Length: 207
Image (tube, rainbow, N blue to C red; front, side, top):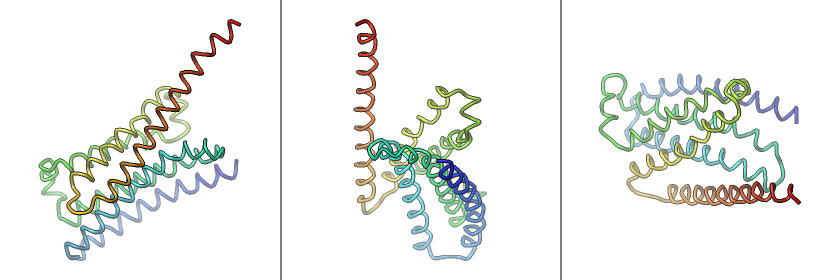
């Protein structure tokens, strides 16, 4: 278990190094005058992969419980940071490649899909800022869980962002929606089981 923690910590730092490198690389690429088709492909793929990493993050808990491998839950933090990093690069590249930054930022406010995506990224910031063990100790577990429970409306915002932007194929969105629906069903059943166990506990104690 200790080896897993050290490995995940190393990966987490690698994510931040990757973000810094990616920002520099995307800035250089955006200045090369790529054709619009190539720029749109990069924006689209980076956004899709960010969403897929978010979904994978959420599926770590059910996978850990179904496979009885608790260490999988520790991967959530690294995957969540990677999803945020890719989402951040997605936005930065879009702003630079399409010359939105710094003089045309008002264009973002005119398009609902851009507002949804930007709001999702902003809402991820508190989760990233409290993704460390010290944050859990300072905030308390209950408060920390409430903050990180925001991941579900965030994922819905990203899904809305993709749905509003998509112009041709809806295959990826349909798959992501199905996976998200499965996750919500699993959470509902898990909560129902926990409530039944909690209700049965006092009755057992009185016997």
